[in-house]
Length: 454
Image (cartoon, rainbow, N blue to C red; front, side):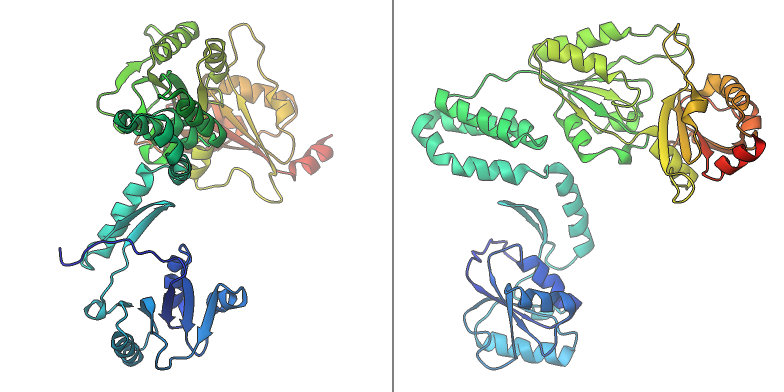
């Protein structure tokens, strides 16, 4: 190594930033994460820096001898090479650590890429050789570390003395392993700060970690593309012991799971045996009762036509902790694939999500009643119902020229897009299979048309 990574104590120490433009502001933003005292050296400051001075978070001073005395760190970013070199010479004469923007040969200190989960901080450096690579690594680490990890670390720090008093020294390492790998971390990751604290305090009071119990997460895999998975969904997949997944889940999403996680297919294949919902409920509850971390992976969003209610109820009846991890729903993916917003100001100010297929024996939904002027109607599971949808809407007096858009397998390699009119909907569906979303738009101007016809 040519450089040695080290964390500096910054509370109450002076950091001098020479320059008043955007590059100086970038360094100021970085140092505002610390408790350092900021000194801005420039005759004029851009708006962001000037606001810091007005708020008392920084002071503005001229470039004069002695300005760098006792500075913990100096950043030089004037944009003028001659002025940068002059400021560098003055700072070095005072023995300061100096970073000159875009001049690595003048740098004693190099600013790393930082992942901030205060008080957990990860610094990534490439000794100035490959800053783009450092940013790429930072992005990967950001995904690995949940946003609330710092809150858990801070909580653990506040309770460290209590752990030392109640947990025998020989058992502290396993105890902290449990804190950062078990229930407290899982609770904090999902935003349950109080539950995490209570779990940790109970374990301290009892002098040992709580027995791990199984959990169930109903996770939305999104519309298909693996890179549309949420960070929380990714974390659940990487923590799961067993994953029960649907037919429409893209294999690339499963590849993001832990290598040793068990994968169980519970979806429905056309013409093949399908798992009844009651059996799915039973197996996910059974796995959780064994203390396993269970992911029920569903395409799209579990809360939108995902049969989540039955699985939530089964978990709650069994006394098993359960959470929903939302996913990008198919209607959103359809709009994105079509390059068009689902709502449009002045035309459609209401979005209605409905199904084209109900339970056997149920009557068809009243799609016409949903499609009031100013509405975009997004129909799920409606491929086979296209003739019925057209017939019902036409019978209700809606014009046969109504705009219809169809997105099949949106965001996947099998994506199919089509724009048509209501009168041609069944023919347009030819060759488009499930999964597909039908978007029918009834602009506000439709009200005037209907009144004229009436």
